[in-house]
Image (cartoon, rainbow over the protein chains, first blue to last red):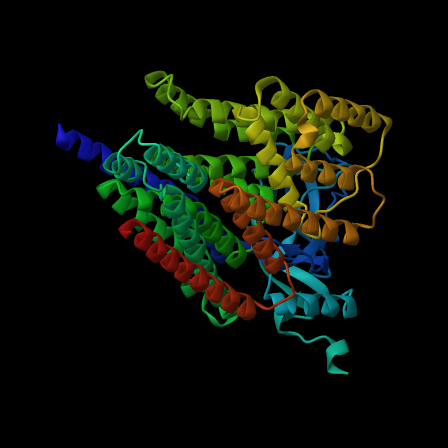
Amino acid sequence: MMNKIETKKLLLYIFIVAVLFLLPICTIIVNTDTLEGGNEFLFKVEAFDPYDMFRGNYLDIDFLEDSVNNDETYDMNYGERCYATIKIREDGFAYFDKLTQERPRDTSDYYETTARYGGMINTPTRYYMNENKSLDAEKVYEENLDNTYVKVRVKNGKMVIAGVFVDGVLIDTIEPQENKH
Amino acid sequence: MNNKKYKFLEKSLAELTENNIISEEQFAKAKTYFKHDTKEGKSMITIFTSIGIFLVALSIITLFAVNWDNIGKSIKVMLAFVPLLITAIMMFFYMKNGNEKLKLYTSIFAPISILATNSLVGQIFHIQMETYELFYISLLSYMPIAFTLKNYLSLIVYCIGTITYVLNVPHYYFETFANAFAIALPIIIYYYINYRKEPHSKKNILMWVTNIIVATMMLFEIELIRAESIFIYGYLVYLVTKMLFGSKNILSKFLKLVFVVCMFVFCFEDVAIQYEFGWDTVLITALIIVCMCIGKIYKETKEWFLVAFIVLIQYCNIPDEILYILINILVLALGIYKIVSGSKNAIYKETKQGVATVVLLIMFRFMSSDLSFTEKSVVFLISGIAFIIGANILKKRIGGKNDE
């Protein structure tokens, strides 16, 4: 009888520990896999510096191209899951080509997201930084409005931010001109 | 038995001894039998120790945060899992020995560690997750622990987390409200089974859970109808519940807790938002005044703090930056009032609530201040050590009284 209770306790404990660690570990695995094996794309962005109570300062990035330009845009409801295929322009920057309700089969370069209004989609918005540098990063962006972009890796519909750059240099490492004077 | 009652008893027994109704020996035996109950004193020790441990843990976390940039990614990930490892170890020893103190400390530490790990992992990998989503996944991880611990604190933490999640959700994402009930449903079922085993038990956790869910649902539904009037409608329901079922009713108690939590939430600068005045708010205000008169609730000083909060939110055309300062002052005043009132009437429960209110407010103000992580970390560490020392001093004093 005691062994049964002990076994039940052990199983319960294993279940508790599994649940505790499962979610963050799965998140890490998916993200690492995407970062290492995904295709790289550059998107032009605008950025500003808000604050998250639990995760500190971050750079809120807004993809300049977060709507679908193609006439074949599927008429989506707000919040509906959709898939946006990604293509690259001549200038080397990426854009979202078209939206579909089904997962694309002819390409692996697509982003799984949710629709907003008027052909727009939800894109990644957060880039976490050192709290002392996030305000500077916003200033750097304001000084380089046309040259700021985000590098992302895309695999199986998952998009992970690899970094925010200005003219090829990571924004975390740049000091604003304003601070230099 | 609290101090006040014990003193009354002692005085009464002395009078009976003087009038030779009872002997000196009987007086001494009765005094010993009804000796000063140190239960409330002991719970203060637990609270002080808990706050101290919490602050020390927070200090360690912020110390790592200061040097975060200098640490490699793989080490960051390992450090991110340390809080969860500590929780797993605490749960192991609790399940092995069934120690009640460990149960209490785990109830406090576990939700913080889950939130900390998920936040850190989110930060390291730039996970795209809003605050309410962070709460949601943290609650899912905490659910099995809340079931296993089965104490009031874990249940309250779990329910407050659920409500915070619901209140943070953008109101047009109705599906996430359904998710909140999906989280809550297993708890209702589980505790219902326990309730069936002890239907007359005073610790009617099913009542708590059901009322919490009903209150949350009510507040959320009110928000869907008129976002501006959420507090005033909610407060009216609270008053009616209190009038009909009394202040000891679980629903009344919980609704009050919801308002107090909202007051704390509004202490943050970027949350204080002026709601628009509408004619329905005039009608509801009139109903509130009527309920306060009928139920004689106007006599209760504590209620006026809630009324002041609702008035500030609803009616006063004050700039946001001043509004949040006023709310902070209101919460501080509430805490000080409870400390003074509780100490005066020897109602330790009220004193504890007052201390908790002031401590929480200081922490919230501190956490949202412009001080650097290093400075915050040092202050947390010193405060934590001060609380632990205070707990030890209190323990010695109570131990000394018991020896007398």
